[in-house]
Amino acid sequence: MLFKNTTQKFARDDITRGVLVQDKGTGIWVLKRKVDKEFIQRFPEIQAEYVQYWDEQKARIMNAQKTQESKGMGKGGKESQVARKNAFLGTEVQRSLTAGGMSAQELRLDIQKRITDKAITDDMILQTLQSPAIEVTKVRHIYLLAATGVAANDAFRDTVFDMFRERDRVTKEDIREEYERRKGSACSLTDYVMRSLIREVAERDRHEKDTWILKGV
Image 1: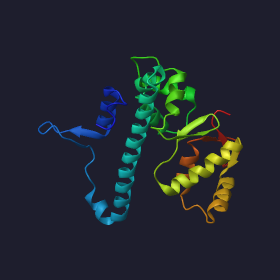
Image 2: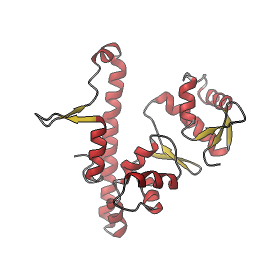
Image 3: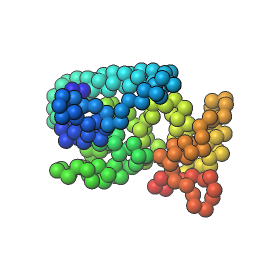
């Protein structure tokens, strides 16, 4: 099992039951939502793209875990033992950040709501955020998932994040112009998608239309 040595069983079971259901007769796990064969027939290129993406992601995660394990074996001390003990937090951090960016303290509080059998400390969260097994990026005091896996979205996110690393307040027009300057063409994302991606790291100013303020400022 890919995550057996780095996650606790209750965390794996929670994730599994969120998307899969077990056949009582065969014991085989299958997706709750059946395969959309009509979509695959209509958009074979998209299906092939995501099959390739997840194959690459699986290989990347396995390589990262092997690297981390080898480092831990080399140290052989208390630090590596603690890292292995807290490895289950990687899944929890990713789960929390799926909803948007958070500070380390917000992550701790959010994860603590789900983990009731032990205390989650700030040190545990910071150590997890530095692990190569999970890919996160930081915008000032906010941690976010480094990528979505959708190239167009990630290009826009990179622009947004870089701008908020330098400024507290940014307008959507500022972001559009910076994106176009970088890419040489206008952003093709819909306004809804752009707003959703900006919300990962910022909140809309109630007094100024289309102005966004970095979370926590």
